[in-house]
Image (tube, rainbow, N blue to C red):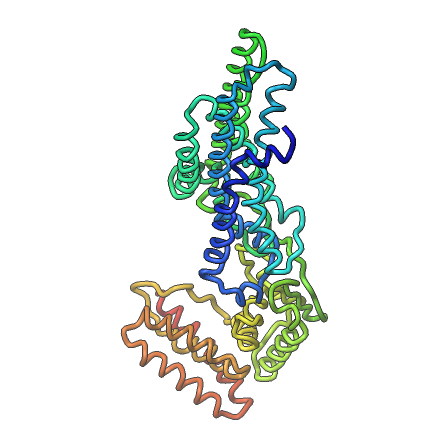
Length: 458
């Protein structure tokens, strides 16, 4: 059958307007429901993350359409008695020619949203970014084989639509159910990517092998051979498929919810200056403000130092966005701040940069608890927060600090307003002192907070 005749008879072409329309509509509906276009292109932009996001909504749809179309084509081969004709071509060649338009339809369902997203974000895909797409394309082939096999044994008028619904339900529901390994072998990766992250090979290999093993076992049923050879080959392939699927399930059983193996730190960075060297994500949304960000950091450090705050100048200040979902804690020599998210168009701007410097630079001679403990005194809060608020006022970062503490107080103290008022009053009184006395006050306030903390622990 020539190409024109194949395209005229395949349901992949008849149904194309329907599923292409669904893909285009749902792309703009789902991918921009929570994130408007302006926010998307403002960054951060990371090609693997954007590809994974665009595919998330279409994996199940692609597999479902592919399987349904393949069932129809498999039923047509059965109806026309193709398998019973003289073997001028192998059954696998006939099946491949018949399923080619079906596979292309499934590939188009996956490829169209990826292309639209990359055009929208103006990103150039890398091989690693296209890995989730390649997974989906491989599984489209597997579902086409499975569907064609099902069509050989079932009435296609009934089984074609039912198989599409069943596959869609199977893929979507396994992503919401336990045990967790079902989520990871479904073919729709349960693990989302953060900026700078990529899927490890095992994350994509496990779902591919799980479904491909089943498809291979079903394809062996088409094997034209002597009955004894055919039966033994089918049995061996079925056992091998069960073994492979069990191994895949076992490998995925150790992964948590949305926690398949990924690797981070792949996003490029732009750096400027020395002592400190400031590095920011090259596509984090604030890369054009690198010099301004570094200037704000150095100015804040210098201002704090002149005010009497002992600040150890770090050798490097890096963008924590580069670390993906697992943020790195700052040390005295290397600071990790949210530079891109603070300095981008969607962030608070340079105020956020100064706020990050404040929380990292101001250190106390003691370590305070991360949360308020029941049964322990919290008298130290006023002195500690007054000291930090004073430092925040020095570098004009008091507004975000007060907003944060206001929320913390409201969930902890019954007299939250009085506590906040006392903190603000102490810091305000300190700011009226001569410069040298302000520095001494800051040191004394820090020490008093530590003394009160120690007393409360006794």
